View 1 (spheres, helix red, strand yellow):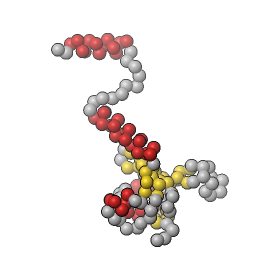
View 2 (cartoon, rainbow, N blue to C red):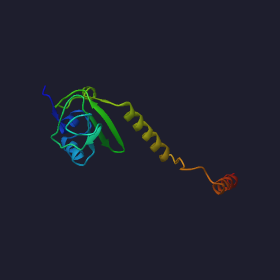
View 3 (cartoon, one colour):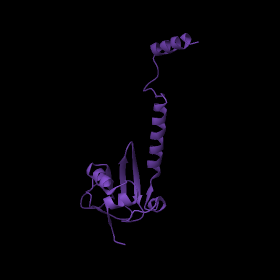
View 4 (tube, rainbow, N blue to C red):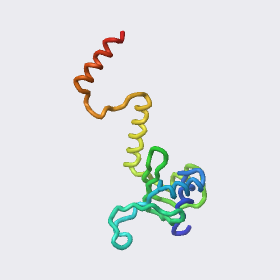
Length: 141
C-alpha cells in the first residue's frame, strides 16, 4: 500500500460520506480539518489545525476533525484504503477520540431534551418567575 491516500478517497472509504463528491464538497466547505502535530513545518505552533485541499495525502496517525450535521468527530487515521468496503472494514480505518464520543453523546442528549420541550434555563428563576409558576400550577386542576 502507498504511504498516503487522498483525503476525499479516504473519507469515502471510511464511510463518513456516501459519495466522493460529498466528501469533496465537505472538504471544500471547510467541514474537515487536519490537526498538525507539534513541530511539523518551520515555525508552526503546536496543535495547529488546517483546512486541507481535496487531494491532500493523509497517512496513518493523522488526526482529523470531521463536521457532519450537528456533531463534529475527531478521529485518528489507523488504516489506509482507497476502496470502499463494508462497515466492519471501514471502522478499522479510524479510531474516534473519547472526548469526541462524549461531546457527541452530550449533544444528542441535549437535543433529545429540547425536542421533548425541556430546555435548561440560563439562570435561576427570579422571584417574579417563581410567583408566575406557582400561579400557573394552582390554576391547573
